[in-house]
Image (cartoon, rainbow, N blue to C red; front, side, top):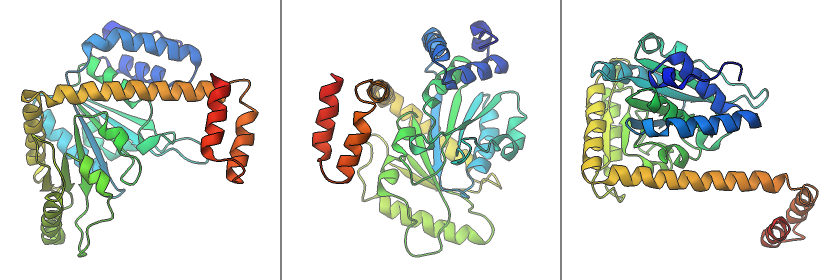
Length: 321
């Protein structure tokens, strides 16, 4: 990169240095990747002191309004907040619609807030592959609360739940008798469900939806130390936002005192290591000179059922090693 990252300024919370550092780790240039790894190694001792919150929910549920309302409340507790919003990449141009700063207009004007939109680039669960490193950089820059907003329910949300301390799924009030089309797996991953837009004519519907999900959660096996909660709120009216934040604080306190917080982060780090190993092996495998011509042929044979996937995989592995 043209301008070298000033680590001292980054550790002081300088936004320009932080933004440059994130741009560096998002770069796909091989030389930048080496620089980025050195940077992460240097700032690692200054990380880990934040509470990491993942927020997911279908489009239109009001995630941005909720984050702005919650963010303004958290600021009153003298906390610095970083918001990492993962934008859907355009399937045509690969670009992303980075409109988050306009959607969180009040929050973005605050001195103790850093909002960084990142294109998802087709990453699993709408979470950019560099989100973990970005979290570490924000922590090194002194941010106390890191919020990761994902594209939405329906993709592999395991990715975001595996990089945060508290995973929150947002839902809309549902007038129907059936629960919303939300996968059981995502509900199981959630530490809390938030029914947003509990205002105006939908207050009663929101209460009914809340009761439905409370009943549904009784059938699931919860954490040994934490019972999943359902809270109805109105982000636009800032109603019950304090209740949501108090719940997150309670979770953090309870999980730390029982040692679960540290165990969860340790497990996440191990999972991250293996994820990087898999990605690295797959990249090297696809670029292996003896395999670049063989893999497409094997794929075609598998498609035409001339070879089983197991046979094709064994052939690739044998050649590779």
